[in-house]
Length: 201
Image (cartoon, rainbow, N blue to C red; front, side, top):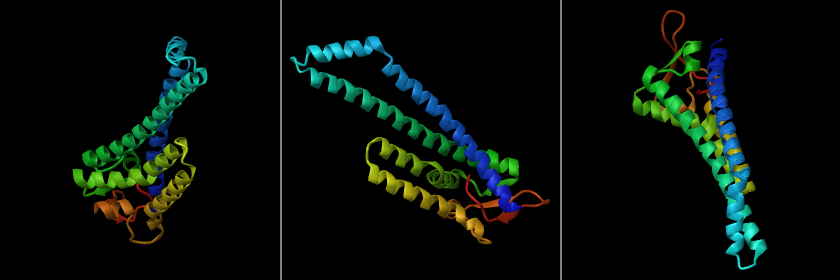
């Protein structure tokens, strides 16, 4: 039962991350669409490049294409960066202010102790395990570093499991709790009881 509640806590918090990712994906799509559909801007840039190319039309068009590609990649990278930042700030602010995330609050858990430093450490590890390494893998893939992206994906799975698997062993704390020196406690059944976390959310 407690493991199920911990999983539900993580699921609620991860759903918030997915919602933030969806919003940022839409924002990124609109930013990219804006530069691609900016016909006057593209025409002005293309015309300028052509005029200054001394007749090298291929070079001028290649330069315009590369410029659009680099800007597109930059927008995608910014989207992933904002997602990681949002996930960290959500975890950190929630733990530092009330000692629990929305998922933990709804399922009856609290993280103790949760001063600013410990909350930041726990939030950093949780964000790394749930979002940051996956985001890095996606960025590497967009940048064209296929092998490094595959390595990052493998690392992401390993870090995720290191943070999540301790729930299978009685009395074991997650990686985030061990790094931050915190404990997840159940607030139900009349009094707090130390928990071994299923997955840090």
